[in-house]
Length: 100
Image (cartoon, rainbow, N blue to C red; front, side):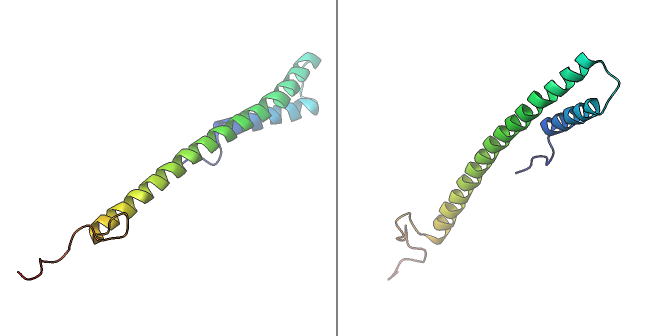
């Protein structure tokens, strides 16, 4: 699966957490602004990370289904090349007709 290791949701969550940490250690903002930053980071970061996890899970299920589908087509294609049917019996003779 070709997805980034660090997503936008994760970066926004980390940036929010950094601002909350700065606010907790005395960034020069008013008390109301400090409270808003901390509350926003406390609520928004877990929501963003959880939403990102749900999206990644859905994408991985789709990728697994596509991989499984392509694998079954490969097996079916190999069976057609070797002359085997789905029951394991030859579908048709592969050589020239006997007695001819």
